[in-house]
Picture 1 (cartoon, rainbow, N blue to C red):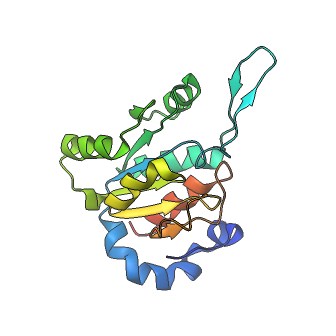
Picture 2: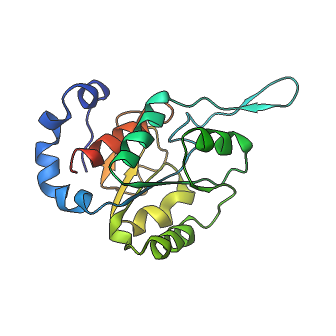
Amino acid sequence: MLSISHGSWLLKPEKYLNNFMADYSKKIKKIKLVATDIDGVWTDARMYVTPEGDFMKAFSTYDGMAVSMLKKKGIIVAILTSENTDIVLSRAEKLNIEEVYVDEHEKLKRLIYLTKKYEISMDEVAYIGDDVNDLPALQAVGFSALSGNSPIQDQFTPDYITKCHGGLGAFREFADLILSAK
């Protein structure tokens, strides 16, 4: 497992990734589908509630750009979240993500479904999550990651832990790592 600083991955990832890439480049090069949780990865895991009872979440535009970069390389992006919210659907629509599963409580089963749909293996799937409901998916994929603020870092050792926290570019950092091997 490797973790690099926020500033480093934005400026010169190759300098810090050479040793890591030597160990994991074969795994990363196989990736054809990147699946992601939302809360705690794309967001800071907080929900904002207005006096009127409306819910709001903040998303990093860096993560949105990562989706575009992955798709340009032919990598499928899938969102799997246990939350049942229109906010995620709206964000996914804006980013043209077709594989969006809200209120998904069986993430591993959904990943298996996607591997069959796209005729790929679990070794060709990368997944980034942050909490206990992500564990079965994290344990089954070819390349796994936790966001830097994940509360389960002592329960699971992924292939990678981002330095960036959820909502502050964690997904972008993960995507940049994958793209650097392509």
